Length: 477
Ligand code: GLN
Image (cartoon, rainbow, N blue to C red; front, side, top):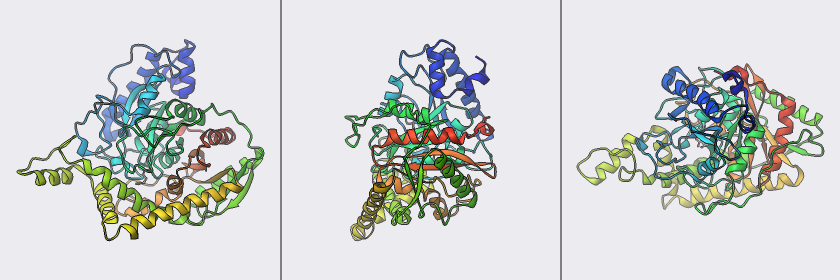
């Protein structure tokens, strides 16, 4: 097979080609390794997708269902012996002594680690501009951001530098970069994939999930990493994810919430989503309006809850246990200098916000209240799912924006997750699929379902994907 033919294969197709003997696992891995290493060596002259690339080709295909298909993994997943810094300077030089459960499971299923991907520091951001390794560029237009925080994973898959990638989503960090890069990204039901070995941001929201070229690959990856894990008490026993096969949506009711699909959404994005809804009707779906009255408050609640959890999770980085240590005469000065030098400005902003929200006099007024808003949002979804099967909205209010455009205004950056944060707070599964172009840039459509409907959701997304026939090739490098 020529390198060009290899790059055309989805991860599922690549596994099948190795299985049938058409392609060797070695050749497959080396084709991607050379491309990924070239991007790493080019730094910001390339897309800057990777923080680390494997330097060896696995000897032979593991006798397992994924047959040695290479996988790129967001930097925040711990992999034994491999640099894992969560995009932060504070973890400089850290090589974990253990491997995240999701990564171990994918390896046991036959996937081979190709590279670690660039990301916003500790997964805080929507543009990948908050990384200690520099920004990632969008392969559709290098003057634009790939989205974040899983920006390196999304750009690598879109550009054909990896067949698929693993990311995490706390408030939108899989779905939004997938939308901005024209690929598929899914946040499974909270608890579906073990968080063990993920460097934590906001533990009640963090969820690992796939960034892939198509919906079948997303299902395949999820199938091989989900399930209960004794090392994560919040992980769930979930039904096995089956390969999606639906081509029609007969009898399914799609609900469009005006709160997430009206004011504040770019016209070109709305236009693409509307024409996709017409396609859905052509496949037999009923499209109806639903209400999510508390969804407009999701972002405000998220920016209390996520920083509160982050301020607690990030307390462990003090120069004693891992990574960077600043020189100082006494212990307190060592702690503060290490944190001063090691954390970037957005991380410091979140720690301050979270520490304030949790301080004794304000706890009830901020944290307690945000928790109540979170419950209201979950109740809105539960009520909506009484009348519809799935909720449909744009994934991102805009297409990929220019580098630097939102860096000086945190609020405008935070608004990037307006449509994705409500599902995160409710813990429900949501997937973004590419649904067309606006001004030559990809638009993502988000479908969300009730908790544990992941398999059905993938099936519906698959039917829509077949009808949309999105062409990703303009992004290949
Ligand atoms: N952009 C959001 C934030 O900065 C979401 C990030 C994420 O999902 N990890 O918090």
